[in-house]
Image (tube, each protein chain N blue to C red):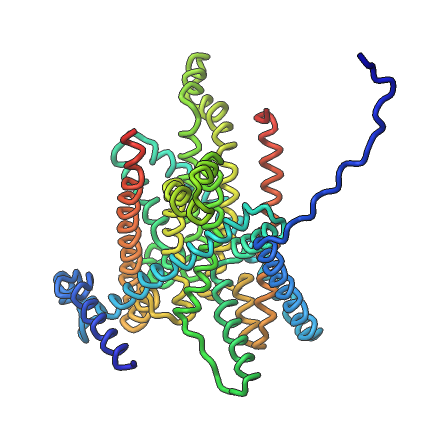
Length: 267
Length: 276
């Protein structure tokens, strides 16, 4: 089993090395920065920064589905007829929208560590436990994302007329199917601009995870800056990389918006 | 034909049907139970770990950290408002160059994380020390507090410029034409007709921006400014007491909720005349 995982991960890293936009065979750093501090390999910091780029992008991509799913259920809870469910969901959003992301991250990182340690101590294991920074970042950012996401989805739910649910009932669809076939496609269309903004915020918040030691763009460029004493250049590179991520996402989101609007323009 | 001689005596309404025990009710009770357990757990940790000595030692630090956070946010929001005015005007100007410059400024500061900008200015400008010394600005950028204030001002100016632009453009054209028809000069029309209407639209986004700044200001702790977060980190690193983070969380939540409620009241008050 571990052999399978090793083979999988080495295969994935091979594919990653091929399509790596910074240090791959067709990478920007390899072609345009081979004589500078950003050279790939041992000569420069290109490959370290490329790894950080990958970590940042994968953290954001891994957090997105978690946040979306939690946010969807929180939004459902908020428009439920049950008072206690609404109250619980409102407490959730109040807390996680009010706390600074950095504080949420620390609370999750150290809090989880303490909780797991206490749990293991009751089981009988006394050792230092260290939570994976990636997982802690994913949980903290996912929770914050879901709190904002629930608000966006809630307002999108309100934009869908009640007749749509009634039409689903009239067609004899049960509730899950009405949601999946009738409500969700319209919901995505309405909520997409708001979700795009949230995705940008998430992308920027991933930079905070460098504080708890995850080797993302900011941490890698920070190490390079400290070692080489070229702080301005390296943090400038970090800014440019974040800008590139933002540009790619805005292109993707405008394409998505166009594809969800197809039905509207034809009318 | 019969005529009712007496009125039907008032009767009690029929008893409400028993509420069915649904799934959502079950989930709601469970979720509320979890929150209650968490709240009680936090309360118990605070009570059990209560140490008067620790409190008297760190409470003043927390208060001074709170003061630093509030000062930083207030100063950067106010200065950012001043900087945002020319940027917003640049974004709306017909001049290509100004429009492009303002767009690039806004895109840079909104597209990159605040923490990266802070590092770029605090650590990055350190490598230009000789040049800055010749210009005579080194004393300013040497200090982490000044760098934080500078970065936050530039950052919030970009966001506020977009808020301002959106709000000004949301004022219908007819308002401007009406002012022109009354013979008002452009300046007076802008300050007396356009801006007041734009500010009502901008009120809510401004509140959100202040809240974002309060939350974002926590990152100055990383560049050695002892704001609320910085004091929390210092206290935690000395005591390894998880309570410190709970206290910080409560203080931040209080700040944000207070501001949100005040802002809601302000908005309701200022938009009285728009109520139908």
